[in-house]
Amino acid sequence: MGIYAEKRDKLVARIEELTKRIATDTAKKQELEEKLKEANRLAMAEERGCKPRELDDIINAEHSLLQKLRASGLSDSELLELVGSPADDNGNAEEGDNADSSDGNADDDSADDDDDIKFYDEQNSDDGDDRDDESA
Image 1 (cartoon, one colour):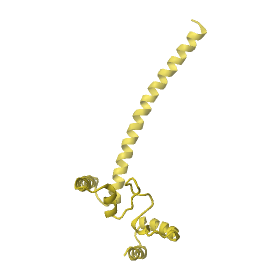
Image 2 (cartoon, rainbow, N blue to C red; image 1 turned 90 degrees about the vertical axis):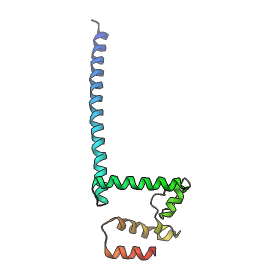
Image 3 (cartoon, rainbow, N blue to C red; image 1 turned 45 degrees about the horizontal axis):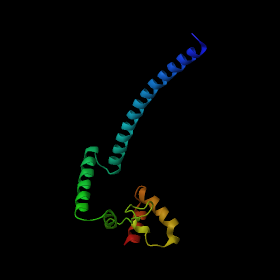
């Protein structure tokens, strides 16, 4: 056997080894993605204070309602306006915007950012009262 034939055999063996490893790693990746999907689902249920089965029911009910609203002729941007979320030109909610900070006053941006962070933290009676007064 020649030098190149030996080298070729080693390369073929290495390629086969890597192909098997890719298959194993792909299976592991898919398993981890499934675990991540379930963890996201459980986290969402926890955030909303319900059981995962109840979360499925809530999502299905909200999806059905959304489809009915769309079928009645409402556009996505009109739906976002109804819930107080401003939309960009494509009808998508603009990131970082909420109904309370859409007054157009650029000087209040840093204060709004602080409010947004506090809004998602555990509720404090002082923060909740201030937030309600601003939106009223």
